[in-house]
Length: 73
Image 1: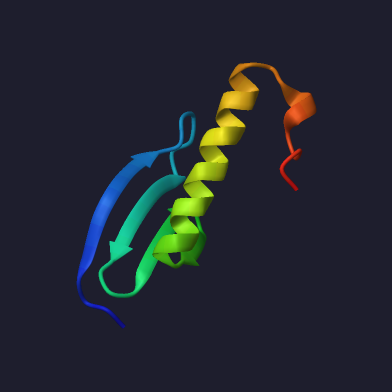
Image 2: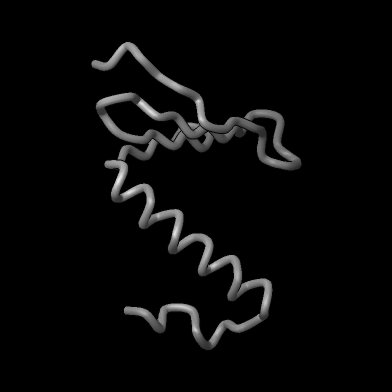
């Protein structure tokens, strides 16, 4: 277990009193994303790819371009 944790971002889900979002860099270990009671663990490379895919999906939603969602598979 890594004792050095750097909190990259934290916040609460809009409209929820309990759900929190936190993204932590566990130095030398990887990234942890906390969403309510869910914890995702991933490598730095996986996290960067995850963020890239999330950014792409947000752009498609903003453009209402649902036909292109999933096209990269």
